[in-house]
Image (cartoon, rainbow, N blue to C red; front, side):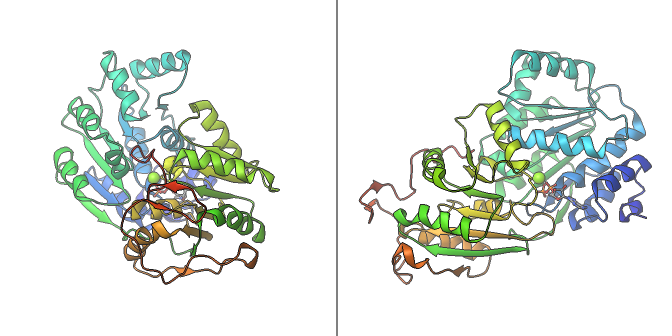
Length: 411
Ligand code: ADP
Ligand code: MG
């Protein structure tokens, strides 16, 4: 008997959980499922990879099976297309043996899919998963009937606020029935999330699982490097460990493209994902990475949050993320749900200060590795961190201390 039986979930749902290999609930699922089944609003805060998607999907599917609605019953808002799609895929698994229907709505597709979305929104799929901008586009056209909506879910709420979706979310919420259940999930709880929650939720129960820290299974280390040592070091790290699935994160799409180019000579298949690719290209790249046809994915933070791909063995941070929280998200792509992984961060002189902040956030000193001998000596590990200022680098190139200009828009 599955541990999920204690929630008195419908038999068809338990059956699908067995088929998917979910034997026992994760801590956030353990705590939130009964509360959501009981129709309370909830704020769920837990680090990435802890199973927040099932924590809200399972009780919502149960409600829908119990009530057989005729119109849109549930609206899930997520920050990115990739995430919307991924939630929809998990949902298809959980709802496989039930009559619950769903559709993911996101931008960047052709006219035919717009028509399909319109049809689902008019006829009323049970669950709509959407990015904020695309959903508002449909709302503005007037055919979306939200009068019977019972669940409003905000996934990755912190990232949505970072991306500037606050107004859009409030606008959507204003179109919804007041009598509804609102669920907000986030990996972190900055002040602005609380104030949004005060606006949108009624007497919510709050579940906090852990501080923002990478999962236990991640081995973390860092290297002090000069910029011109970074690519050879990455090659070394990938080859030394016989890696078959790794992500290299960069702050800017410019560096993503450069690194993809620079790694062309290695024996692994390397591809990149960033905001210059259109939606179908991004999906193709993600799919081939998911299938392990692509072994190394070079990416901007667009994939750092929420994207759930199994068996990623290694994360390499080509640069130190600007926000300490982003480090946790990047590193959270490996060691999902109990497995193990490795996360390396390359620190140039300008990034030392940011790296200290990360160590403060995760409340530990991350061990510093020795550069392999063929790379020559790296920077002095004991040099004091610099606070600001542009400076000339050892390689001779000259850049701002954040390493690039497309920094504002973090997608
Ligand atoms: P989060 O949204 O908290 O970042 P996800 O919901 O994406 O995490 O879940 C992370 C991974 O863990 C997914 O691959 C998911 O299928 C898996 N998972 C979630 N809950 C369980 C469970 N109870 N048993 C086994 N695997 C689970
Ligand atoms: Mg999630």
